[in-house]
Image (cartoon, rainbow over the protein chains, first blue to last red):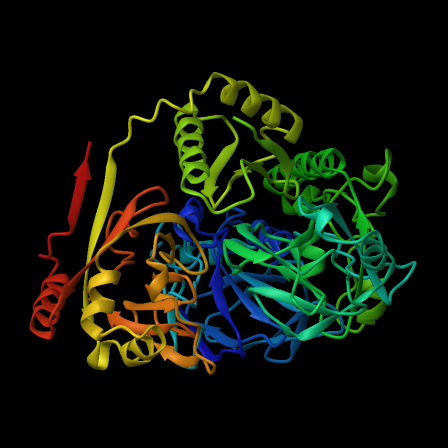
Length: 366
Length: 241
């Protein structure tokens, strides 16, 4: 009753919704980089949406289970190769015991999620199963996965259920209007007065490249220097998921799940919550451009997304193989779950099943 | 009491009480943190105290920024910032100074012109206010170091500082609760586990409390270390009215 790791992938960890409530002691919550992907994969295989999943970075693991299980991947253009048979992301796949599973990488997305039906039997540490590499706690022995690891399954009974009739329309991570630049909305920060009008204009009018110095702690960007009124240092204060700091060189750093809880660089803005999953999926070399948003608008989007998510979960629960109708939410060009328009549930998706295999994965996502 | 409330993204806000590192401002931040925590405002998930501001993390599906900022205004208008009934709590941290545990003590002596004994006397002779925790779990930003001990950081940071390392960086002193790279001048080490996830609470102190360093020798270091590992060590607090 275990998942066996044949090849772990370079940076594969176990993550859940994070270790909440310890930021005043200096603990960042950690948790899912792409919350939408993790929740999606979880509910497809019948888990609670906050269940711990495997999170891999670009290169996924090779595994086998000694029990039949349902699994799903999400987070980008990843796929599941079960001894030569290919299955796309965002649908459950029932994998017979002993079959070798390889996660394949496509053109889009970097932080993939693999959910296992019934969950992994990992003891929570300080209320969470998330791996905190810095402290060496949580997840599987507080570290990235390694070849030979055997991770016990919590409820392998799940594998008896055939869930393969479930699917969701794939999430679009690339804008059809401008595939080269991803637009991400931000709320201007409390330290905006640290920057000159020219600096602010540079920040909002330019696009920035994701550099290879990007990881679960933060994404370092590269582009035109953001001019400050006199240095970038502030009296250290709190940092949130998505805080955009401008470092001493005038370049932005976007703080992510494993960030520090406090910091001393001026914060120009914060990425809105519904756009963080999209931002997290940008690969080094891709371009981002920031757009201003108000806190009121950002919170309206969060509430809308929350409602649609609950409807989606209810529909998955209520449907059965005979009368399956996927919940037809649409995805905005920003790649976040949200209503696409007043009639999006009826007209946004035609109810076709996503084509399997050689459907051309490019068109699948655009 | 003057403060400003500002949004920090869509799931947190900050209450700014000042712009300087100052014990009075810090005291106000701590009082506000305790006061608001006791109000148990629905939708608020946690408070993070920093030098001069208090960050409030909340769930916007439960409470909006506009609602929460009004609620905080109303609560803070009823708070009496002078009504601080909290006792001064000082956590005692034994430190073995110098030798292999404090390889940079000679550098600090050279830079300050003080003898080893005098550096230790001055470093262990003060109560340090914990302004905030951050950077890594249990890492304290302390105030109150004798300015005569001020020594610049190492030019080349070390790849590995042992956990429990006590150091000086310019006008600051602090302790590394975990193994980490770092550029501080290391003058000693504590045998205590400042952070232990198996312990409740995992981190023993919080912002607004004080830390005092207590010099020990190597024999005592090893004895305390054994007691810490066995779970029999009695942590020492000084509580004053």
